[in-house]
Length: 405
Image (tube, rainbow, N blue to C red; front, side, top):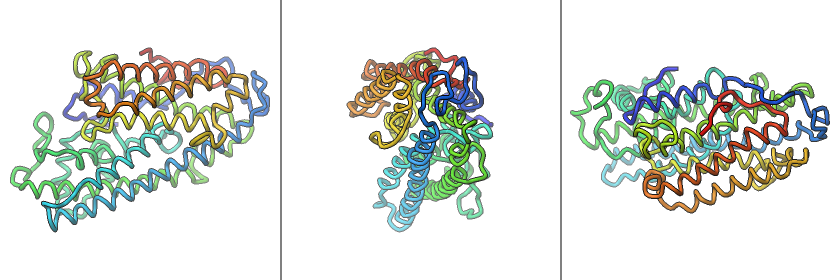
């Protein structure tokens, strides 16, 4: 994996990128026995049907999330294309609000999918995941360079470019960056021809490149859904559901591996680093520039969608519509664990929704409130690492085993 940081700090981006690249790369068992507990065969004596759990999670939580993401990328592509046409015809009155709103919808669906990095998203060092969204590895300079390279070049192929030049994060830069200055002042080479272009020409060039990026994103989102539902793809929805009695507990474990994104990324990278609890670009002080979606002001919404995704996995869908991990915990006599998880998630979501300003502002103006949200998520993470894993006789991903913040 090639790393290329944006202008807001190489050291932090590199360290988190390494952590991200390793996410889901292996497991370290912390339970005494990770054998199958389907139909009462495990140490806890439960008769809970893990097949029902896995089928519901796959069919009613993960697959619909990937499908929503695909649909959102198509709507986003249509809106960006229409905006480019408006720019060409009447640049003064062209309105970018709709493309930006649809980017937020796409990001919302994706942030839920981030909690579901299984199969296609986790294989080959998270290659497909990073193709769709490479944060924290993003290079604004590289995006500007490709904007010029692709100008008036219909054959320019976004799919061949490195992660930091494409995906949802590249679209954020192209749609939300209000400055028409290039971002190559600190790293890289200034894009050729940039300074000879007018304000309107730069806007149009960025829009046209955004169409190519959005088109590639839509193709990859379709690829994700196809691979997730295919009958010949390892470790995907179909194979997880059809693992058989001897392998169904491992299917459960593969799903729970993915939810530790909450620990590694939501808690640590998205909150711990900007708060200065972990190493950041500001010497341990509060550091808004290390937040996730600074250009769009979407950082808090991203965290909210991470928490919603975990809630759906616990409840088996939106509003306890199916069999989820909470029902599994209840079946082994651990209702207090499921209640603690759902309660702390609900507390976190309530605190997030009570904030009416972007996290980029609130993290400095009301650090205590943001720290409380971090504390709630840390509590959820602690329960997941201990009681949740132990009571369901699961194993802990190696990426989550040693984090102590």
